Length: 381
Figure 1 (cartoon, rainbow, N blue to C red):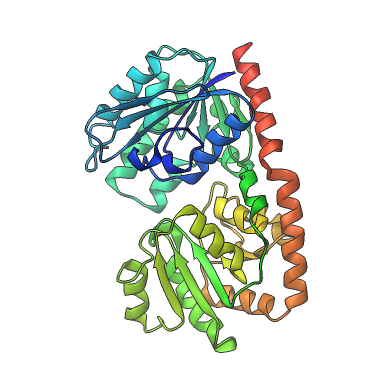
Figure 2: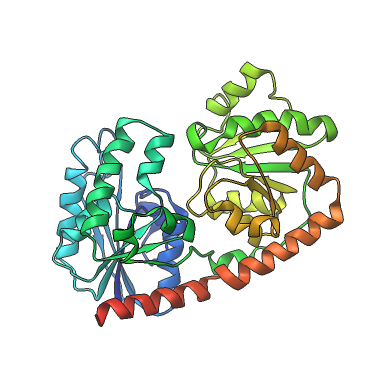
């Protein structure tokens, strides 16, 4: 098939033949790059459409197996006009290519452009539920994105959601045109050697405030460390570096001891840190899927996540493949983590069960086959 895949992408992670040193960063999001790479490995011709800050004009690069189309993204205030500048570039890209289907990701600006292009065979992948995101993080940016979501989700003929949890939040008229295909992990994770664990917990999160709930994880660690005084806590991601929001909060509360504020790392560095951690603490209050949790499961790192945190309890088998608790309460988090760390044999067994479950249900080959059948059905509709 000739497939157009559009959404925010980490361009340096895509398996393309172009000079990566001369390409912009794109819009850092590793799972989209893994999505592109998976279809390339299956022998499809891919037209990858994305955008990037830091470029003067749109970029088009063509090769035998993959073409890249990179629009210019404004670095500030892009949402004020509903991403009109970006959407017009994206529409021009879509209208210039001949493909069997467009697979658009998120119900935001990429899908808005795809649905306004000439292509009828367009499916939109729902990665989150904007009305809930806005309630958890009420600001003008998320309000505008929520409005775009309402337009896109109603206009799209074909929708797919990444979890039953997300599907269950949709109104009935949207469920009727939505199928569930879960996220997957890249085959490359299976090449990472499962080495000896080091004495630290890890949290990976793209943000500190709101539903990311990192503050409760920090407070929980101050209690955990009373039982394990040599244990460290690694914080990886946006606003989790030194002198950033997480660090300032910990200093204000006097609980920074033992915490390493690592901030943003590359995807490969993040995976390496996850694989060596004794346990991943995922304090998020809501996740439509939970990719970092899935990656930890594959890498043999046990996870503690929220009992009421969207798809997390489902991904962890209601506690069968990881620890679950009320992550709104630091004491409950601490009690769960301490209980798991005190029994090394049970912790190792849990990690083995979780890895096997993840490989069986969320591996690249299993999920991509579902997408291929889904796409063929749309093309032949």
